Image (cartoon, rainbow, N blue to C red; front, side, top):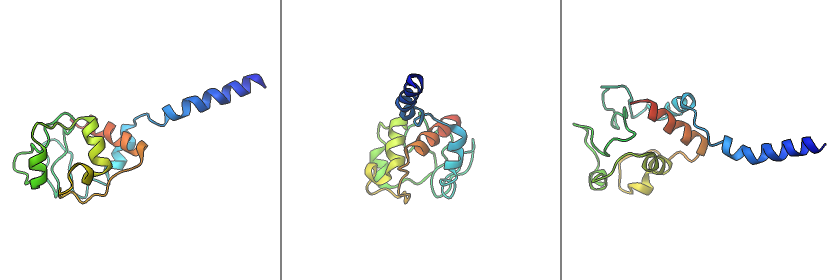
Amino acid sequence: MRRLTLAIVTGLAIAPFAAQAQDAAAGGRVFNQCRACHTIDAGGRNGVGPNLHGIVGRAAGSIEGFRYSANMQEWRQGQTWTEENLRRYITNPKDVLPRGSMSYPGLRNEQQLNDLIAYLKTQS
């Protein structure tokens, strides 16, 4: 009985950390929501939104030939798409760029967000 209690307590203590793991394959499925506006192929075209290949670590608003919103043009100065910036933007784009043109309401599911960022990191 004592071992069972210890196993349950240990499992409960570890569970919150396990939910934070990143799964790039699952993130690829989450990215399907983004495909309506974005491509992610190397050298791929821009859609309604810019191509996201290599987004992690890239300077914000830097895709040549893409017409960014005035709000993005103001914000992008000195900004890089770090995991932290992507997390904040993907969670609620209007929180970062209130006058931006991205119509996506945001991804609030923490696990899906972790998975999506893991997938984006593999696409560079």
